[in-house]
Length: 154
Image (cartoon, rainbow, N blue to C red; front, side):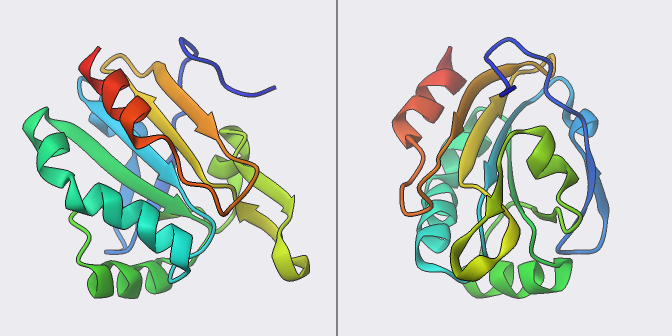
């Protein structure tokens, strides 16, 4: 069953590209935008996260936390973050637990790869409830950034 608006967001603890543990519950009292993406260094994933990077002042201005999550290793994510100058944490869901909990995991992706994060976006409100949820089946599609931003203003 997929997560719906109003559901409690599943808490998690993942390692960041800086090798520090990050939990969703640490951001209680703050809006959080979570972007799941299939793979670092791929075209659409780069576009997705660069859109967040390029609009970071908006999120910072409303005191919202942006997080990127993929099944890539923390080491790959560190290089991806460095190359693209992302100002927000990239978290490694290498064991695929968080992607699965959010309904954002492909059973099988391209080239027979199994257990890759789907492209997805979630907005979590200050109480830890889901205010926006979008899970895309087609990895070539981008999340609806306008809808994400509108949910943050509500």
